[in-house]
Length: 449
Image 1 (cartoon, helix red, strand yellow):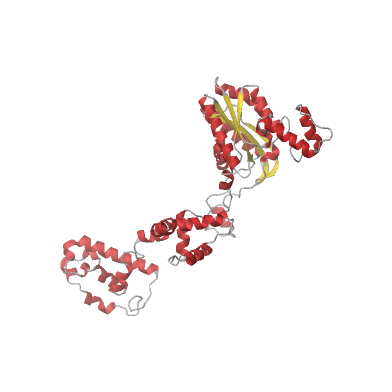
Image 2 (cartoon, one colour; image 1 turned 45 degrees about the vertical axis):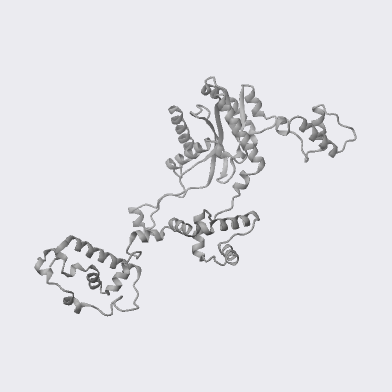
């Protein structure tokens, strides 16, 4: 008989004593000291939630019946004691899904630990760790925790709690790249400030800023990551692969490569400036700079200048580029300490500096130092081929600070371009096909602008 078919007079006559004979004293949870796993507790919690909802649906009719006591009814249904039911379903138990989710969320756990200990220990721990980092010392959670316990007897965090405390403070364990050290070097800070000032000045003059850069594409470009069916075993029968597939072919990391040179403005890519040069066979990790030289780059600049002027529409032009060697070919190399004596002497004589016939190399280096200082420093003396080419057309050249490719917005364009090629590409695509995809994409983008 189904429960909903019971008449009120029928279920009012039901009592707990009628079911006592069906209790199993050996069932888990029926005796003191018994243990229930988390799954059993979850089931008990769901059964109690069912009987609570049933009591709510019955309303006043549940009064005076066994349905008015969800906990006892749950104990009877699950074969456990009423105290066990209350223990399994009290606040914070496994049957509370929200509580369970909070336990499993590492980010929330870290935040909770910081809320508890942050005011007291946050700055102490941070300064201790940074003191060790400043000394280039090895930092481990156990080592830091031991030092804190020795220096502060009131420090009582366990190893696990301390780990989450560090995560909550913003620390993470990953490869040391030293980027902050590089970016905050005094010489780079000065060059970054000079670059930002030059860009600000160019914008104040109403200049058209052109950002250029190079990147590479491979034949057979495709995504390295994707959805895989892990339910198919490694050595599955042929019938499985007749019904399903082998999955996508692994992306390769070497092959023929093409160098892509392009330029963009704030309005979009400069039409006709994107050039694709097929290079040799390379590994993915090889630097594409070895496939470029100043001849190719300077020819590209000469071809691109008329197209840049069209985009500028009468505005002054400023070309922004990085410090790649082929961007910075010097028309006249300035000697340094590693240069030969004859080279230093020839450079000084070419600039009308009197050199004694018996002068030693150290004497020549001292004369060279004075000469460079009198001309405003080495940066003022350097003369680059690209600057000369652009200067003939009234175009200013602004160079990015070293290690600051993040300041070049064309990098984001390259990222989107490669992501698109990986989405549409297949492992068997030839470089010519990849080049066609790329050309079509660039043409479609240029038409939008």
